[in-house]
Structures are given as C-alpha cells and as structure tokens.
Image 1 (tube, rainbow, N blue to C red):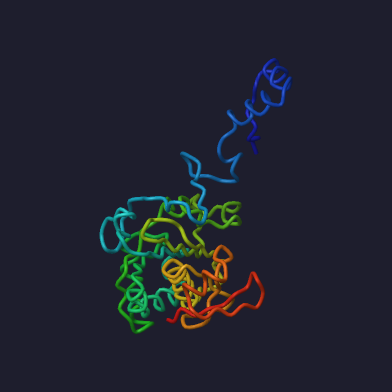
Image 2 (tube, rainbow, N blue to C red):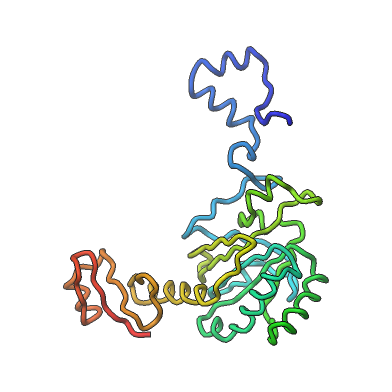
Length: 262
C-alpha cells in the first residue's frame, strides 16, 4: 500500500526540517485531507458537526420529490435519521415506529426525514413492506442516498466499514439521528451501531427537553419527562429564580429545582 506521505526531493526535506514551522507547512500542505482528518469526502474535508453548528445544507432526491434541506426544514424543528439499507430488519421496525408517531412529532412542530443508501425505486417498494408490517402509513420523505453523499457529509459512517469497503467501493451508513432547530442549528446527535434499533420515546423526550429549555430558560435532570421538576441553571441566582419561577427548591447552592408544568 502506498504511503500517504508525499514524495519530496531530499533538498526540500532538509530545508523543511530546519524549523518546526517549515516542517509542518510541507506536510500539512502536501498531504491529502484523508491523512489529516481520518477520512473525508472525495473532494473536500467534511464540515465539523458540533452541537450548535449550522447543519450542512444539501439537495437530494427523496420519495416526496427533490428537496433543498434547509428549505424543507423551513421554520420548524427537524429530525434527520439514517439507515444502512432498504429491506433490513431493524430499519423496517424503526421506520414503522416513527411513522406511527407522526402526530406526536407534529404536535411538537417537528418534521421527520429519513435517509437510506438505496435508490427511489427500492425505497418505494420498501415503504410498502413497512406499512404492511407495522400497520401504518409512512408519510415523511426518505432520501435516496445510494452514493452516500449525504452520509459522508453528516459523518454517518462506521470506521469498520471504511476499513472494509463493500464490493461497490462505498462504505455503509450507520444509524444516526440529528435533531435540528428552526435556525438550522444541530442541537443533538445520536449514533447507533447497525445492530441496535433506536428508541422513539427517547427521541421525543430529548426534543421535549430542548424545546422546554428554550422556552423556559431551564435545564432538565436525568430521566426527565414533561411535568417533572426542572433545574434552575447556575447563571440565575436564587432570588431571581424565585421571581421568575415562583417556588424554588434548593438542595445545594448549585442544584435548585422548580416546576414549569408540561
């Protein structure tokens, strides 16, 4: 296997090693993105997907027609969740479960969009199976990502599949969940191995937590669900918290609870 370090003339190397700055410049400039980042898209480095960063925009074909992702989100929340392939057992149960929870997501002003690494013809046939097996009617779009462009853009790839590329020369997609707010900011990510199905109740719970925090200026403790006590953030002193929330229960100066209802 060829080395990823570029070949350079001995004179260039001797010159480069005279100072740390030059050494870094030679190797960083000449080595490809793959060497620097672990892996990258074929043409450029991936965006760094941090919580609070702008969700990368893209255009794609879906079972509901062509979309621009940011235009699809509009002024709503969105969840983008990926699947390794059509007609796989775990994914079939997941999409059926999400389809049955359509009303719960709509109540929270959330749009769902799935992604699977097959073409539209395959998606259409798979949706028919999902509806039959789960006794539902799947109504959200599924992105056709046979070339894995969106999967790579959002880093939905398992390292094992990068190390063992499939027979088509393309890595498989893992189960990822991205919760994106109306400002198109990534607010939460979850990554599951292909062997483990997701928990729809947890996806709903974290959306409730994020929306409650934004609306009320609070944080939520372990296992919180709507109606439970919430935490007064450290940035708000107790006197101001009582003015804002009313009853405040102080367990420690840094741990204070209140209730904002459902």
